Length: 447
Image 1 (cartoon, rainbow, N blue to C red):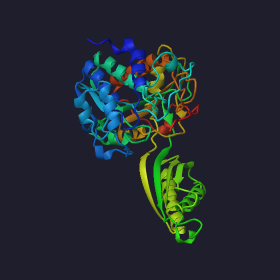
Image 2: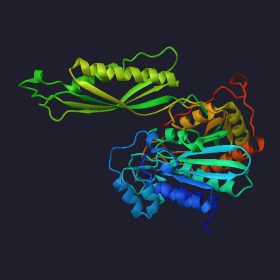
Image 3: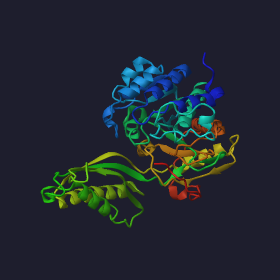
Image 4: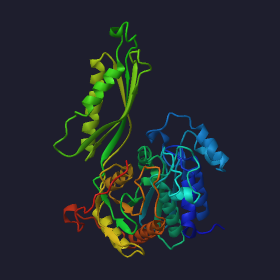
C-alpha cells in the first residue's frame, strides 16, 4: 500500500518539480498523476481525450511531440497511457461519486514553462537535488505545488465520509491558455454547484490566504504572419514587397490603438522576427502579440483593432497578413458567497496568519473558462490564493516556494470542500449586498 500523500507532500512535490513539461507535452506528468489517483481509488478517471474533446483545445504546438513522449517512456510512464495521449492530449479528471450531496469541482494546473532552471547554490532545488531534469523546462510558477494539493485533497476527501460528488480537474496548458476551454466544455463540468481554483504565492507570503481574486483580465494570444515579396535590396528594392517594413508599421500602429472609456485595455507585441540577410528585401515577417481587457468585451475591442491594424499595415506595403487567435480566456470574478466561506475556513486553519477577503488579480488565467461555465449554470466559483514565500518572482529561473505552504493549501481546500458539503446549498446574494470588502490588495498575476 502506498504511503499516504499527506505524509509525503514535500517528496511528491519535489518529484513533480524534477520532471517539468510545458503545455500539451505533460506526458510523464499525467502518467505520474494517474499513478497516484489510481492508488487513492476514485469512482471515475478520465485521461486526455476521455476528459475533454481534443477539438476544443487551444494553442496546440506545431512542434514535434515525439521526443517528449519518448522521454516520458524512458522515465517509466505507462505505455498504454502514452498511447492514449497521442497528439498531446494530456491531463486528467478524477471523480469521487459518494451519493447525494453537492457537486464540487477543484481545478489545478499541471504544465511548466520553457525556462532553464538556475544551478546556483543558493537555489534550493539545485542545492537539495530536485532541480529540473529537463533542459530548458522548469516549474517556475508553482504548478508542481498545485498538483500536489490536488492529489492530497482528493485523498483526504476519499478517506472521509464525504457525501456528494467531487471532480478534480488536472488541467494541462494553462500557461498558454489552451486547456481551460476544453475542460469547461467537457461533461465533467456539467452540474457543478461550486468550483474552487487555486494558485500559490503571487506575492502573498507564507501564512496568508486570499479568499477570491477579482478583476482578472480577459486575454487573447495572437499570431500574425505578413507575406511580401523578396528582391535585391541594392539593385531593385522597388520590385519587392517589404514584409519587415510592414511589420514595423504594424507594431508602431498597434501601440497607438486607442484606450477605451469603459475600462483598462492592454496590447503588446512580445516577439517579432523577419528577414534573411541585409541585402534582401524581407518576404516574410512573423509576430506574436497579446491583447487584454478589464472585461471580455474590452478584450474583444482590442483584439479586433489589433487584427485590423496588422492587416492594414500589410496592405499599405503591398503585402498580405494572416492573423490567428491562438488562445484566449474570459474575465470571471470570484463569487462573494464563496469568498466569505473560504475566509472563514482559512481564518481557522493552522499556520494561516492573515486572510484577505479579496484581491485584484490584474493578469489573466484560463481557469476563468470553468468559473464562467459554473456561474452561467447557476453555481458559485472562487479562485483563491495560498501564500508562500518565494525568493524571486514567478516565471524566473530561481523561483521556488516555501514548502510549509503545502500543508496550508491542503487544509484550506479540503476543509472548504467539507464546509460546502455541510452548508449546501449556499444561498446566492446580490453582489451589491455582499459582506465582502472592496479588494484590499493587488495581486501580481503571472500571465
